Structures are given as structure tokens and as C-alpha cells.
Length: 303
Figure 1 (cartoon, helix red, strand yellow):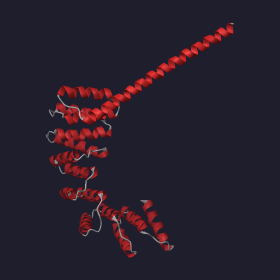
Figure 2: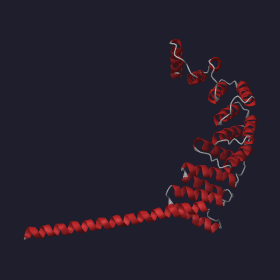
Figure 3: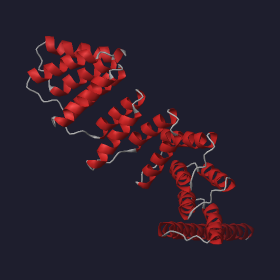
Figure 4: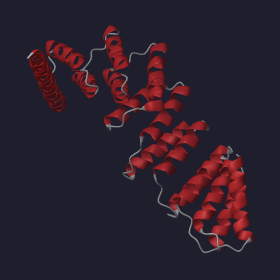
């Protein structure tokens, strides 16, 4: 917290010394006050921004809304967002939506957060993994497991995969499904397996594949292709080939993108083998040349 106080002190010193304070500096001050849980002073600086003839931007309001949510002023934050959008004072960005969705979920207003997610879609605004993950996490806490599962599947259908810490939420969701006696479907498994492969947790992805089979949920063509590509990316060709054989036995086709990766990987392996063979030949030639040189020196010494 100390550096926020220091930042405010510096801004005050600039003001006292007659140094012009621009919009960027005022935004820094607003951010400092919000981090110090004094969003009220942040709004005072907003007034100062207007008085100086500056226009607040989306960053200014994102900061203030986050400050309101942090101080549990959820209604004020939501009203500010609604007002700004209705009067078109700002063009919301992904940070704006993420801030509001996160605040709504933390205040137990998951239903409103989902409505906001849907309104983003009507505006052709693509939600990111952060927005989806916050709502899925909130649905799990509300014990709305089926809704959380559907949202996870929807997310992955759009090409948004859980990653990093967000992947943990997906794993928790899977465990919740099992705890509640619900059987995840192939799409749910595929979503988490895809996230694990992108994270590089291939052994964990393969374990989940085995768990999927043991539970009676049969892997799909997508499941296999995702894990095979994961192994190929990690240069574990032998594991990828073993899964490809299993795919063939199960009657599944290999995706074009998987075939392209496999061909490229095998080509590089072939080049590496050629290079290794060439190196061995060069080393053997060098050894023979060294031996011949040694023999000549011995012969010269005897002569």
C-alpha cells in the first residue's frame, strides 16, 4: 500500500509546485485511491478531470468500477456501468466486462453476470476465458453444476480453452460432477483434456482419457486428435504413434492438422538421424586420420 501513498504524495507535490497535471497523471491518482479503498476520493479526482477540460477514458471508469466492487458497493458499480453504456459515454472493452462480471459473481449475482455475458454476444463482443471462468466458478459455488458444465462446453465450442489457473476451475467442476453422481459427457472431457494439453500436462491428459474410458464415456475422434497433437508438440512421437494406432483400431480418422504435425515431426526426426549419422561418419574419419598421422610419426621416428 505504501507505493500508492507515495504516488499520491508526488502528484500533490507537482500540483503545489505549479506543474500542470495531465489526464494520465490524474488517472494514476484515481487508481491509487481505489487501491487504498478510497474510491470516494477517486470520484473527486474524476471531477477534477472534468474541471480541467479532460475527457475520462475507458481506463478511468474501469478503475472506478473495480474500486466500487472492491469496497462491496456492487449496486453503485452496476449502476455506473449501465449509465455509461446507455449514454454511450464509453466504449466498453474486455476489461470493463471482465471487471463487472467478476464483481457480480463475487457478490452472488451470477444470473446477472450470465445476462451480461449474453448481452456481449448480441453486440458481437467476444468474451474471453476470464469472463467464462468467473461465471463457471460462481455456478459451481452455487451448486449449479449442470449449468456450469454447459457453459464450459459452450466456451470450448467457441475455441476458448481453459488454461493456467482457470484450468483448475474446470477440474473442480469435473470433480463436482462425480460427487453429485453426474456423468460428464465427451464434450466436457474433451474441453478439460484440451486445456491440459495446451498447458503441457500430457500425462494428466492421458490419465483423464483412461478415466473417461473406465467411466463408460467413450472417447471421440476429437479426444484422440487433441492428445496426439499434444504429444507431437512435446516431441514425444512414440506416444503419439501409440495413440494413433489405438485410434485406427477404434475406427477413428486422423484430422488433417494432426497428419500435418505428424509428417513435420517425422521429417525433423529423419533430418536429425541423418545429421547424427553424418556426425558419426565425420568423427570416424577424424579418428582414422589421427591414427594414420600417429603411425606416420612413429615410422619417421624409427627411420
